[in-house]
Length: 332
Image (cartoon, rainbow, N blue to C red; front, side, top):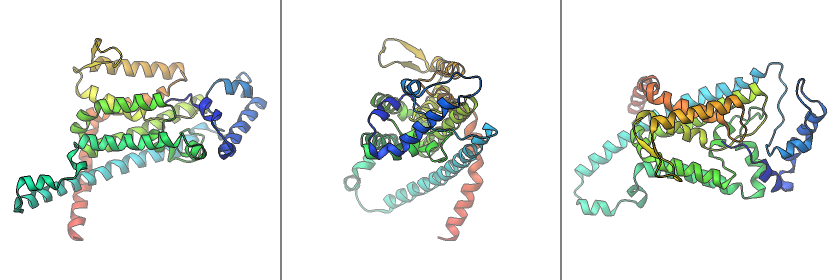
């Protein structure tokens, strides 16, 4: 999740986004007039030069109160995500069995059946799932190019604990303003999608991808509240880091290489250690170019899910799926 987008956003803003940007200017003016204790006063000009878009923080007696609603949303969303995907997996398996039965009983020849297949179903399942995700990210990326959409995108597709809406914790993970950021994230997602979807299946993959995006946003919220940093975040990096953490944990001896240095190879275990160390250092040192706390939350969730998540989360959903099966048969 990259943060340094305000320079381009503010320079491209028109009257359609003036209300939202005016509130930002009001916050900057308040900060310059009423600096926090123990901190150097920062003028509006210095805020602009920082190239970081700020939003007005809500003043709370205890900053931890800002995390109550995001925490409840994260727990509720992750739980609903895995429950929904468990039911989805049940329905998918049921549908496959039904189609096999129909084909077995059908008198059509195999060559006639192949002619009836849809082009979309000829594409492999991993490509269909990831293609849909990339398509959604592309739509939001193109929406940023339309100026009249900027106020809406700034409100719902950028995340910060100092905004009241919680949906941005998820929607911001499908949002990219900068073209390089978008291309890099989508390239990495496409590069690793085949093995990870085959390991998890499309249902678990979807649950992990969406849940890791919200969890990475939550950890970013925690960092911003603790450090009183009113920066916005956006991008799919948290979800992608979770997938990288999962695949590197599952195949620690796999050999990887950088796109710009294909001759330099390293093990997945070394890559995992490097990613965690880099983002941990960035979080401690408060580097501001990347949202390191969100990256760290994503990769740690990916590691957790491979090692313990299947048993703790997925197998515990068996009673829910059985209940769904009984309800489905009852009202069939």
